Image 1 (spheres, rainbow, N blue to C red):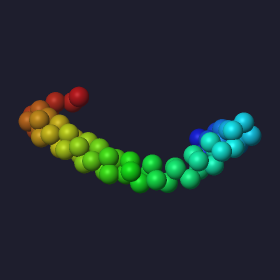
Image 2: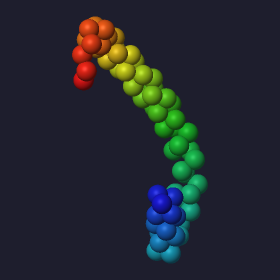
Image 3: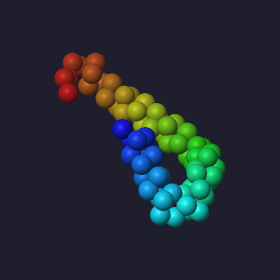
Image 4: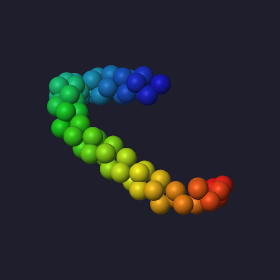
Amino acid sequence: MKALILFVGWCILFVLAWPVALLALVLFPIVWLIALPFRLVGIAVEGVFALMKALLFLPARLLGHRG
């Protein structure tokens, strides 16, 4: 559903301002490649926080706390 809404939005943009729509179509892969390292760092940071949470709650889990 999200892809369909994106496609319809792009079609409307193409009808209203076709140079902007074509520029967006060309620049999208470049922006995606630039954002990729930041996504990877975000995934790594999320993993570190999950590990820290698991280590902090380990004593409570060992003692049988149900949370």
